[in-house]
Amino acid sequence: MACHFLIGFDPRVLQAYNSVMLGRSVAESGYEFVPGARMRATFEEVGPLSDWPAVAASWNDLVVDPYLAEGARFRKRRFAVYTADAGGRLDRQPHQPHFQHEARRDAPGEPTPEGIHRDGVDFVLVLLVNRDNIASGVTTVYDLAGSPLGAFTLTDPFDATLVDDNRVAHGVTPVAPLDPARPGCRDVLVVTFRRLPQ
Image (cartoon, rainbow, N blue to C red; front, side, top):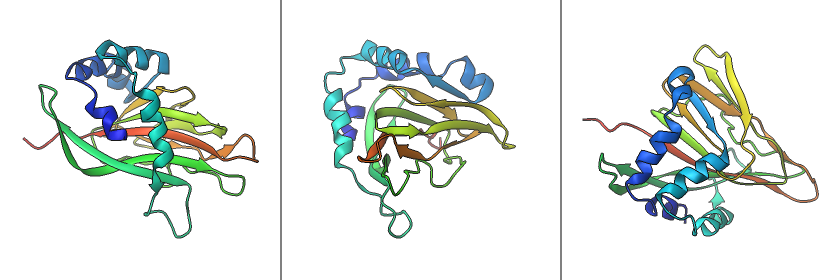
């Protein structure tokens, strides 16, 4: 279902995305936080988001990440990768991950179990789909020497950040349920951008 989110956009989404995300702060500091209202309005310039509730609900059907350490069950994921040409044409490729981070009373969720890291791509977009019953989950962006550049929390649907993965690293603090009697989750759509070899 997460794949539908990408397929539903026409080529104008790349122009809208560039106007919002590739702004001054990415060029200056290597990252940018975009509030959800601004990101949503940008996507709505391209077309209606009438299918958004179904896209958000699809995170409830993700499978447990089989690559976590034995017994760990705090991250769920699904895969989808596309290539886009200069005209905006999308072609489906072999799968890559989408994540759901779950926190329970006895086990905090770890959005980035690898800690502070780089993803090995050109840019990374992290867009909040849903956040329910969660405390913390603070994203911090670091320069390549390890000094913090800024921190923020994705709290509202469509809150997003873009990081220039060649220039900065990032990490997210563990999440825990606000109400320990019920699970909490932090659902994010992670989109990585890599220039294809010429």
